[in-house]
Length: 124
Image 1 (tube, helix red, strand yellow):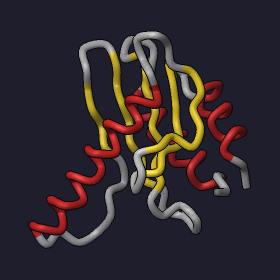
Image 2 (tube, helix red, strand yellow):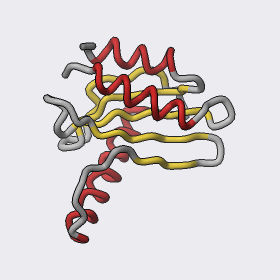
Image 3 (tube, one colour):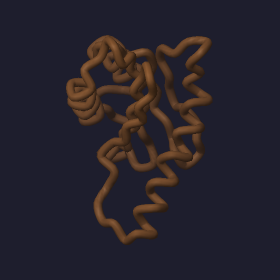
């Protein structure tokens, strides 16, 4: 099991092309931890905004009567990928991992695989 700081560091070092990562509470929109980012990528603002994305999808699934859980969500920009991965394990309810990738330097399939592994080791 890994704590938040260790998990965020592992995300940044083990996932090629990682630009920034955060653990976010989507009930409040607050980032519980961030690593990376830049003046053009404020992870705290992004965390709050992506909380609305998670909430909207959950509401839509409920209205449609869709069963199951969101595994992850992908937002594709011209130069970046943004991955949102709600946590499934114990203590993870209401939290999601947020990862920003440089599209030219990353392998999306490997990033998803690594993020899933990091989530499984995360102890919150």
